[in-house]
Length: 470
Image 1 (cartoon, helix red, strand yellow):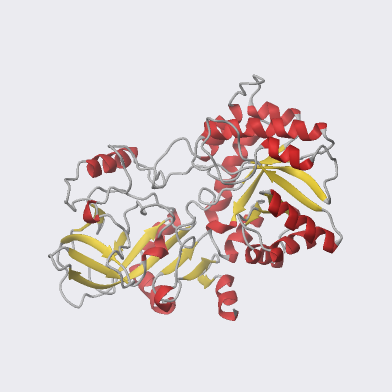
Image 2 (cartoon, rainbow, N blue to C red):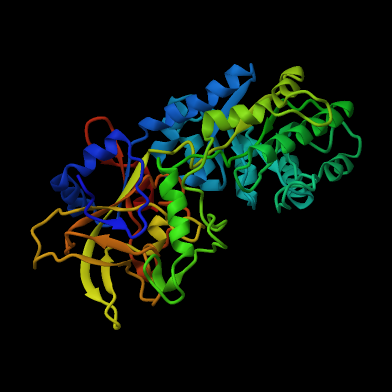
């Protein structure tokens, strides 16, 4: 069956079976929005365990002790916590409330790590009171942590966040260089209440080669720390584990070629000829690579099989020789296939120069990450009898904020059978970052409600009760 809408340069999303069943039920989609409002975030976390198991399979082939931590910042629901724990994952938290919710949910403190970029005193104290490992980013943060630990009379278990000195890697704002950490520790086994439990790093991008270089450097730091009497037990390589939203590599390549060929001033592909940051015919660095290979299992396998130029050993061998656990903190990749966002059509109209616009009951922050755009074709559902006949058109999706550039997506879409108010548009595979990371309630418009599939019905996620109580 041909889609009721598609990009002028199509990018067809890969769908989970639960998404296909949901979208086949037009009346059910309309009823959910009638009850809970638009937009509406739907979560079925059944794919999370599968995604984690793919990573575990790669580690097992190399006999590497391995643990997956869900990056909670990627999705704010309580259901994500519960499913991560049920499938044997730990949780990576980035704020006081994220940590408090995990502890309140009964997550083992030994399976939590605090990686917040900026850590409040309340967050540090909560972590210390529960013996949760803190990823230590800098000296000022260390002073705050030492002060809090001293006032509580406890030791602080930390993972030193490493900023690589390797010139092959891009600069990072996260962490300190190995030499800085060793100088900070000053050759002391006991640095004023700090226990070095592990090494942690964060790299931008998705390069397996870069991860291997950073892991080799982390092993060198572990060896240096061991020489000072410390006993780090793990290396945490953070997130950035790739996934693909699209099955078609040809569509992904074709989109960028079509965008590069868009004449100046034309809006055949994007609003106001927006290049989305692309230079030439290749994908822009300003958007997520919606199609890439390898992903998850094969990607991690390549990281572990990489050889260290210094020792000739593989990354896996370096870890196994030292009895080090490898940890990772996927958000997007672990939540692949776990969510979908629905919104209703509010109106159809034309821009003052005649370009067709379809207005939705949502704003542009409710399906967006920090990328230049969300690059999947939404799915239109003719969910109601139209007030007027639907007519074919080609145009843009606009949202609820009262600004000229309030585009839900910056791509142009074809509607071969038209669209009308009260129809439903679905944005597929949005659970990882795309629902929550930049969502805004500007204009005092409500945030999207989050529903969870409990095996029998769609129910409000418990985060909604917490929001109402707050």
